[in-house]
Image 1 (cartoon, rainbow over the protein chains, first blue to last red):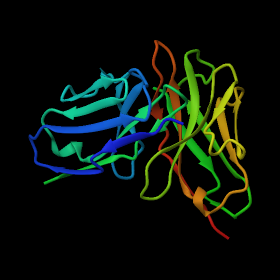
Image 2: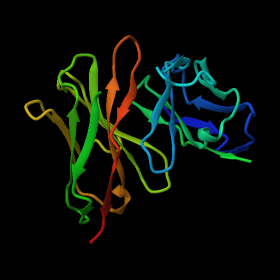
Image 3: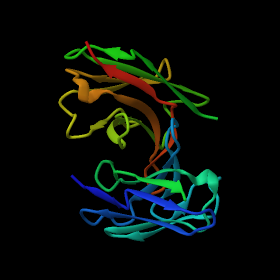
Image 4: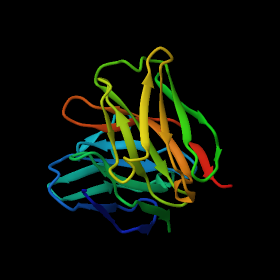
Length: 106
Length: 122
């Protein structure tokens, strides 16, 4: 099984800050990684697919990078509506999610 | 616009079988390039992939749940289903159905249902 480890588990930042979340795979997964946003009481929403491709309609302040075992998700300028939990997910071998990163406003 | 809607029993007794259905509207479940999946989320915890059914009918399950899970599709009703047997309190969760965009070299859960809470309790 491929394990996905996100850090940090929680994060507090101010509006306008640059926010970065990392995700590490337990083995090489090439670029087979997606990022999702989940707001309280809602279903997750796909933001980034294939490590760095922005899903249609997703604001350009969201971005992703990385390959192999190390990946990064970035919000260039945090907005109040970005408060949510973010998950990475691999699809190299079946599917596995990271444990999530809860983002709060400082 | 494609929409997914879960339905089924919200309360299941321990050792019994959990049964859920996901109705697909606004598009055909037989469309090529898509698979159909179930994902769950225990209260206050993260997401766990349960399994999926490929558009060909092939199924793939999370190894940790494989012995208890069955996913099937009813193309005549444009819906797919989840059965999870021998449930325990650990199976209490919000269950989501999702479409898997499975083409062009990537695979992602691009459309989700709203989720349905299932509680396992006597």
